[in-house]
Length: 219
Image (tube, rainbow, N blue to C red; front, top):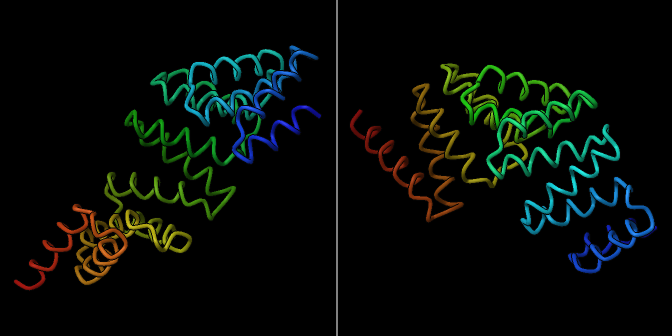
């Protein structure tokens, strides 16, 4: 009951009262894994990373198959720069729940940052096999495919993101870059223009729009 009440307070943004209820739950049962996990989430939301990591570790200690504790600990460790240990906990989350979309996406992002692109692509594909509408999976997979010489397929994934995030200027910018890569200047200009409309301060989009227009005018 304390955890449920605490969760409601945290949802409303009252971390102090929420945390107080989680701590009371632990006074009753110090090995209550879900209370530790909730305290970890509250600390993570406030970027108190060492505290968050400690609570997720305790949750796992008392409940080793706690998927979300492994997943969230992976997030914290990644934010702290502990990449190898973050990968370990993402893998453990996926061992317990192979269809965990966010764990697959986050593991793919970590592998991308380590230039382990084949492994990253595998996990983005896994995420999409479970949720074909996962924008983060489509976006990150598009970046990898573009970098590995598959611009047409990369573009198809970036356009999938735009079906759910039509007002995301960064996605329009990436789409413009990919259209330019396959030689479609008209669409590159169109998407770069939309990016600038959505964010007039986006210097990269302004530069791409100007360069693409000038190139088109010379042809």
